Image (tube, rainbow, N blue to C red):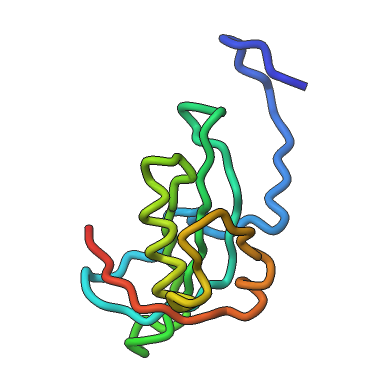
Length: 124
């Protein structure tokens, strides 16, 4: 039930079951090149425009080993003007031959299950 705005309730109940510490902020790691593997992806509407959507990729660092296991996030827009970014990410991850230059069904669950690795450069 939505809370009335402007009112401070005496208490609220919140269920944090399955919520990661830090949410989707990702790990704080230095700028640089990393080998990561895909461990999750969500399809979400943009906060400021619910008619536009993103894929939010959850990536786990594999190398360098000093940061192995830390999680970072990468967002790709599904807006027509930004699909070049998604295509480039998929090509880097899966190979040019698996990402046609035409309409395609992207098997997100299969990608996450396979946990492919991809090199990324993280910048602040």
